[in-house]
Image (tube, rainbow, N blue to C red):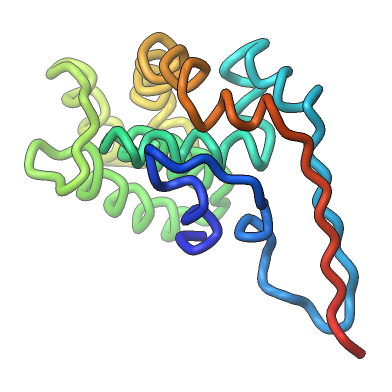
Length: 174
């Protein structure tokens, strides 16, 4: 994913090619990526619309990297994956990983949350369930929606996307 986002990672550069977003080539297939201006415009309808669109999420992640605040979206995405886990053993493992990476006060990618939320989350993760991270995820979502999302909509990345319609097809040789 890192190389796919490289085209968005420079603040001063606009980009005109979405090929870096394409997944690695599959055996003898044709893939087309079409991002319309209407889709990009819809990202401004709501933060959740942006997050639900594959390329909207990728553009937002790249924007946050330029602001050195990508830990928030990475945490949100980790929580989304966490909710999908079915087995208790995997829940415990993933919960510990998320806590140690994002929530603990000594976490390398600590998200900005208040003491009460941190403490409630710590207690909730003592016996993790798929909903154990809902409150803290909601807090981080709200923070991004109120702070980062409006800046994203004013950013060069988003403004450049509004100016261009993308169509890209890639065919592997047979």
